[in-house]
Each structure stands twice: as C-alpha cells, then as structure tokens.
Amino acid sequence: MRRKDPLILGAGPAGCAAAVVLARAGAKPLLVDREAKAGDALCGGFLGWQTVERLRDLGLDPAALGAYPVERLVLYGPGRPLEQALPRRAWGLSRRALDTGLRELAIAAGAEFAVETVREIDGLTVVGRDRQWETESLFLATGKHDVRGTARPRESSDPTLGLRLRLKPSPGMARRIAGKIELHLFDRGYGGIVVQEDGTANVCLALRKSLLAEHGGEPHRLLAALASRHPHFALRLETDWRDVRVDTIGSVPYGWSTRETIPGLFRLGDQAAVIPSLAGEGIDIAVASGMAAARAWLVGGAAAAPGFQAGFHQQVKAPMEWAAGAWRLVERPYLAGPALAAARLAPTLLTKLISATRIR
Image (tube, rainbow, N blue to C red; front, side, top):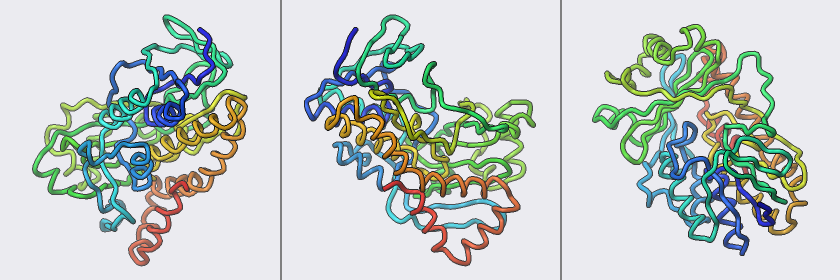
C-alpha cells in the first residue's frame, strides 16, 4: 500500500502528538500500533510542568483525566532524606490514561488508526505481519522498543534495565507519598515512586544488569535485597508486594540520541533521544519531538527529516548531558553521599540541576 501522507509507527505520546498536529493542519496521518487499546507502558507516569503545557496546547488536560498533583521531590540516599519543592506543579498519570486520551484526540482530529504488528522496516517500507506499507514519510515512535532495520546502538558492557511494579492503593502509601515524587538511590541504580490517578503507586527502577545478575536474574529477589538495605524503600513496598507482577525491559540505551537520518525518516521520542529517567523528562521529549517533527513535515515534507533530526539533537544535547552526569553520580554511593550533602547545604544546586535537565 502506497502512502504520501505520513505513516506514524507507535501510538504513544510521541506518535499521537505528531498525529494531532498533522491532522489539524489537513494531513491524513496513519497511526499504526500493535495494540488496539493503549496499555500501561513500563516507562513514563510522571508529567513535568513543561509536559503539561505542551499537552494542554494539544487540547489534553491531565488534571481532567484525574492526574495526581505532585509538588515536592524527595531524595533517599546516603545520609538523611533531602526534600525540596519542585519549581512548578507536576502530575502523576498512568501511561494507559495518557495514551488513551492522546489516541482519542488524534482520531478526533482526523488521524486514521490501524492495528498491526510490524516486523521490519526496510528504508521507508514498513513490513507487518499481515500487510506492508510503502511511504514517503515515516515517523518512528516505537518508544524503547526497536524494530528490525532501525535498531539503536547498544554498546554498554553493563547495560541499564528497567523494572516496574504497581502497588495497590493503601492509606499508608497515600500518607507517605502525598504530593511527592520520590527517588530512592542505591548502588548501580535508583527507583522512582509516584502516585497515579487511581491511587496506585507506580514504582519504576533503572539499574545495571550486573545488579540483577547478582540476584540470579530474579526481580523479586533483587527487590527483597534492596528492601533489606534501604528501610525507606522497604516501607513503600509494604507487605503484599511479593504478589505483584514485575514488568521488565532490557538494555535501555540511556544517554543515546541521534543527530542524522535519511530523508523521510523522522525519529521521535525514545527513538530520537533516551534521557535517564531520573530527570523525569522522557514524556516531554516524546511530546516535543512529535510536535516538532509534524511542524517540520508540514513545511518541508519528507525532505525536512534530516534538518529536524539534527535540530532536535541540538535541543536535547545539554539536558541529556546533565541528566547523564546526575545518573553517574547517584548510581555510586561514594559519589551520591557528597552530592546530597552539598545539595542540603545549598538547595539551589538541585533547583539548577532540575532546570538544566529540562528541554527548551
């Protein structure tokens, strides 16, 4: 099937943002996703203040979806906890709720939607299980999942893995994390915890593969070990966490971004740049890249892809470097301790770091 209007592979925040902008300008983008309904993706769940502004520009208000307001950041690491107000209000919202809202917005704007499992991309030809498309413009928005033919490089000797579990609502959890997002720091990893719209606590961990390997590759064994060493983290898990499913994703290329592409291929979201998750900026990169790519296509068509990609790389370069530096600090306790001590003495240091990891 031959298409001149863009084909968007992936109906997450990046793909849907692009679809909304394109459709409202008169294009007929086709959104292709392997799932008919949005699932609860492992990554995401925290919406920063800039992200919320972009979403509202698109016509989606997270507060109207029941998003949980977040006013403060708490860091648990060596020494006493460090708590500080965020520069502006943020929100906790599940990917299921966010992606469902964005899909509905895109379809209402005029985007088409198709369900297909894509097996390979050859140039600008998308090969699915049941059909294939040849297109002049492909927006690649598959998140952290690579498609054969467009895989991102993975060169780390000790790659980063992602783990996630959702804890059911409880009075204790609601009391401890009310209005906060927490980062729990430990050797070779960290865990982020935020309450979402249904009262559940989303617990996401980024950690080195070697740490999981030391516990037999078993996520529940690793979590038990972390709880035994970190009492604040143990309190968040409460009593029934062992019965909760742990979702995993392997070899996340944090710190990677692409500066070049072929005409017609627009890389969006995590396919454009993968910022360490402790920055809380992943969804913003997704939405911003989708909107920017759509605007570039509306001006220059398929030929605009290389210029868009190079420009977006420059836009995220500095925030990515700051976030990567922070990640290197917090995953080493002997560095995290002095860094947190300095932040306690000079709270503006943390504020400046938060600002430096935001994309403009």
